[in-house]
Structure formats: structure tokens, C-alpha cells
Image (cartoon, rainbow, N blue to C red; front, side, top):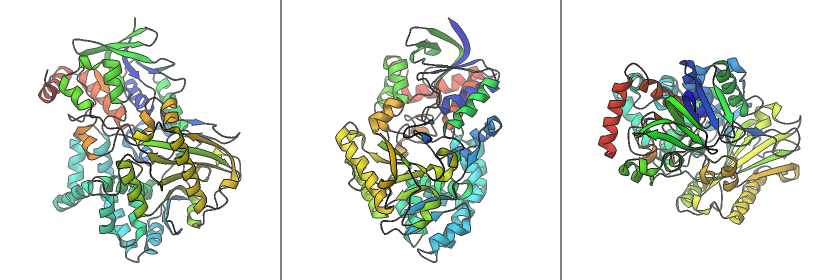
Length: 528
């Protein structure tokens, strides 16, 4: 039996972040990836026509560029280079008015002031709030829970009154926050459209915080893309890991986690080969798959399994990539230079989200568009555009292939309405329905791209189940490192980093005391 210090199950970006941090500590680390390519939902491929490079899943990385986790890895020293579109984001209304988010706060303010003169100053007030608290806030949400040090710094910058106001923002629906903050539609939609990067609708509690966070990140650092494709993030992580002696093996699907006396001791792959882990097993796989398939419910406390059965996935996704003979000729000309484009008004966004919550396929989908060549000219030949768009559908309808194809047609028709001539410029297309997304990446259950709902009832110490909000599991030395763990979805490395730090703490000088404390708390929560 081979023996290493740590086995990481899954070579997604979180698994590779965890592996890098453990290798930094001098551990012998082996990453086992089930497919033939590392990256998980961070991949690039030639899906349509020669010379067109498409990000298969995720594409724009404001959280990645801002993340203290990824910044701490200094991936730029391993070849990662960021590039920006001329404008960050355009939100286009049905009448083709447009709210434009630029990295210049004054330009964004001027765009919103065109909707109402008071809204420019309101935007700049939010920018000042971000400038005051953004750094400790990111640290607080991406580091292990509870974020004591970052929380103290955040509270110090907010003050008592500011902390109360910010706590209220954290639970507000984005529709209400937008109405309180702006008089016109432009600012309200910048927040609401960004909130819909999650599965939270405009009327759902907590959506304001997500919308505010992404909008402020866009204002501060933009929505950058890696030069050459999303997979360059993974290439940099792999180069860094290799330089530290870590190894990745492909086509190695883990069949189960080996454990004895409620302690993880290694893994067994689908071919029956066993690998011993001296110190830890870290799993960059969805929580339901880890506990049901790799550990087994019989090996877990019944109360924990009861919570796990209520785990809620986020909505399914339909994504279409196109090779275009020319960039889109948006009627709203400001949208032509934006990397990301949102389509819809507040009534449409609300109706779309309400339909999803009822388990219905929306008649008028919210469409999120990525203009990749506009952001990075290396993505397609000169004068062309590598384009994608996605929309969400309910999990309950995800297996209805005919309805999903109809929804993909609606998505295309929506773009045509705002960019006449779009369909005539299509050289090739590649459609991924929810089942296609899961087939390409088994972690995207039913086409869910967030690792579980972003709703308040499954965040912080409720993620993935009510508990400690940490990477530790009921199995000693087994740590959850996927987006199912706090802080959730997005390419920021938080879950991987948190799992690595938990493993290091468990194996540190105070490791026995650490496990005694975690074990005692878990027994209080879930019983024996």
C-alpha cells in the first residue's frame, strides 16, 4: 500500500489550493482526479470552431483576483496573467437603456446619474463604504469560521452604528436594498443582476449582500479573466504544486474513504488500489457525494445524516457558447465594451426568480452574457467574438431535454432582440444542458454550479449542514474541501484553504486538543 501524508480527492481548484498549502508545510501530497483533466469547473476547451477558445464552465473571476487565499499563493509568479474588458459590466433593460459598471467610480456614477441625478452620489457612497471595509470583509468571509481576527478588524472599521447597518444589509433582499439606495432603475439593477450570479432572487433575504459584494468587486478590481483561458488558473496551481513536490494522478476515481474507529486512514480507488494517508484525507467533492458514496451513511451519526438529507442544491444551468464572425452590435452601445452583460428589468428578474422558486421554467429568462474576446483578444481570431451565455432552470425540470432545448432557444432569442444580427453572425454553437454539465463535471449535480444553494439557511454554520461551519467532518482526519463547505461557490479557494488549515491544525502541536474540542462540539450537535 502506497503511503503519503495527505490524499486530496478531486483536482478542482479547491483541491489544488489545499494541496499547495499542505505542500508548503512540507507534506507529501497526492491529488487523485477522476477525469483526465484537472480544474473541475475551471476549464477551457475549443468547443465550437478552430481558433475559438471557450471557458467550459466559469469564466470571470472578481473573487479570484481579490481573494486573499489566491493572492497568498502568488500565482502570477507561475504564469497567471489577468486581463480586463474596457468596461466591467453592462445591465441592459428591455428598452435598451443601459447601466454601465466601469472600474472608474466616476464613470459608473455618471451612468447611474442618467437614470436619476441623485444616484451618482449614492453609488459613490457605497464605494466609500467598500474602500473602508472591503479588505477585512473578504478576509472574514473566506477564512475559517468563526473569523475572529478579521471580524474584529471589520467591526473596528464599521463602528457600532455601522455594524448594525451592515448586519441589516446582510439579510436584506436586494430589491429592497436597491430601492432604499437608488431612485432610478440603473443602480438597482446593477445590484440585483449581480445577486443573480447566485440562486438568490431579488426578493430573497441575503441577496443584497451578494449583489453588493460583486458590484463593489467589479468597481474595485473589475471582472478579470485569465489570459488564454480559465484553465490558466489551474495551470499555475499545478506548476506551483509540482515545484513543491506534490503530485496529481488522473483517471483515478476514488470509490471510498478508508476509515477505522471514526478516523480516516486512506482511500481506495475504483480499481481497488488503496493509498494510506498518514495525516489527512481532503475531499474536493460535493458533500452529499462524500458522505453517501465515499464514507457511507452508516458510518455517520444519524442526526448528521438527517441534516444531510435536507441538503439543498442550487438551480440547474443551461449554458451556450458561440463562435461569432464579429462582435455583437448591441443596440445599447455601452454594452459593446463590457466583458459581462445582464439582460432584463426588475419586474422580469423578479418573475424569473419566482418561477424558479415554484419549480417552473421561466418564460422570460434572465440572461447573463460573457464577451470573452472583448475581455481577452487571445480567445478568438481578430475581428471575431468568443461568446457565451447562461440562464437557470429548476432542478425539477432539468431532465426534460426538449424543454431545456426550448429554453436555450429563448436565451438566444433574447440576445437577438438586444443585438440585431447576432444569429446571422453565428459560425458555430455548443449547447450544454444541465445533464451535459453534470456529465462533464460530476460535481455539478443537475447542472448546479454553486455547490449548493446560497440561501441563508445553508450558509456559514449551516453549510453544508447545521454545525460548526468548518471543514472538519464527523470522521477524524477527513476534511471537506469543496464548494459545499463554507464559504461556498466561486473561484476563490476558500473551501480548499480552510480544509488545509484544519488539517494542519489537527496535525500540529495542539492537534490532540484540537480534535478533542471539535469532537466534543460535534457530539453535542449530532450525538455519538
